[in-house]
Length: 362
Image 1 (cartoon, one colour):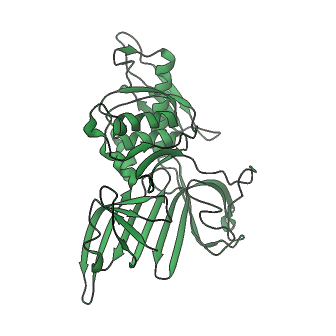
Image 2 (cartoon, one colour):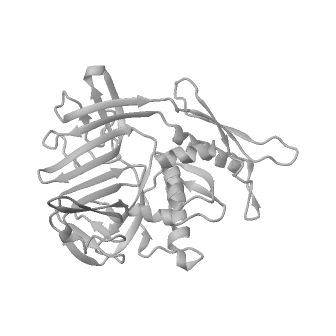
Image 3 (cartoon, rainbow, N blue to C red):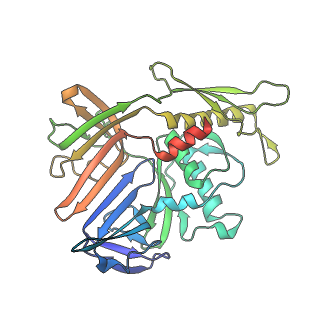
């Protein structure tokens, strides 16, 4: 595997054709990351701010971290970073905005106004453009302001089980923003090939299962701003789906009825509160994950029969569990002996960013 290194303008600088190891972690709801271990021969090429491009991957890495280690007999450098989507963290939503549309439409509007055609030209991210609109998501109303662009996009997409990406179009020298969704590969549908993972299918090398619902919440009371002499509007969001109710109080007083001199209708305001509650509940999901090391030589081929974001069937025969879960993370490990793939179905942790945000909003 060769790694092409690009400068900040995406101009090719050189190719890393030999390295010690590469960890390439793809994530559905969060920004993916990578870590490259190489010898000192590549020191001048692997600098912070440059890009790591793979012709066999849709992601492009941004080198953010660098470290050097000297042992008794050898030297080694490590570069690390995240994928292109991290560039959207560099822009904030400075003013309060009210937006109505599908989740995909709102995301595209935010990216266009904050990073492609902003009122202040200096805020534009070079080479960023909107890619193909796919008609994903359901219509909603949301109010935002004060968050980073990345944070708001993640909230909107996760609330409707969508993802987004910056795809670098090498031929046209553009970064294309697109909202996307994984495929349904369960046995309840006929459009896509089925993907079943189990020891019985002989496609697992190792597997483990974990679940934790200590912080799980599935029903939100969302309280908006109080008008003078009136009781604040309260909206409920029910995601119990037959489970015992676990309630969450959401202070949504930051969601204003009046934006840019215009007053929202009651229906639009309630919809904005509902969306706020939906996003809040996403920070309290039931943590349940199936972690598997996949046999690359088995019946299912990576990126052909299954990929990031796909909903697959996973079976743990020993403990009598079977579930249809989305692939939320894939860890590729490239070393001298080839490629190893580990897959996480479901969410096996709450990210530090989510945990901090959850505590701040509580």
